[in-house]
Length: 172
Image 1 (cartoon, one colour):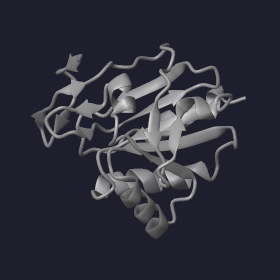
Image 2 (image 1 turned 135 degrees about the horizontal axis):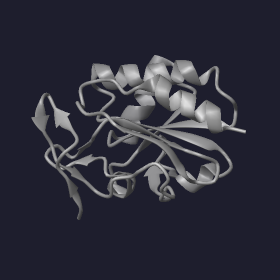
Image 3 (image 1 turned 120 degrees about the vertical axis):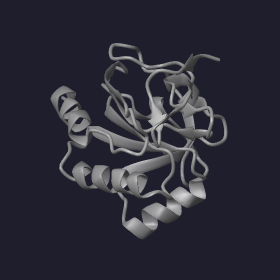
């Protein structure tokens, strides 16, 4: 199990990220997470689409809720060839409840709680908390990573517009 100790803090305390760190230019590993109806969702389900992965610790925190609201709002102006997939280790039931209460209808939330398949393949699992670090990954329609952000302080918001601008630029 690979450990990455140098990038991320949580409330100013260093944390250890487990898994394989992803980089621009990498072929995006396929992964399986669970949708709100406990259905499997795979990255490969979105082949021929540009995918923005919005990664966050828990919808039960204000910053994570803001992250999902912001991406949902921005998604309204994006091409139908861009998909936003929000991933955390929240249970699918909690994700469904949050999306219903908040009117989140353009971001597909998915849970990595069961197998940690996404988090280990992309290096987002915080060892000390068993939560995901915050970040974004943009993958083009050919499955190549075009943008990666591991937010340095987990309690801060990601750079939404950087990810969105990359996605807009590469979608065809």
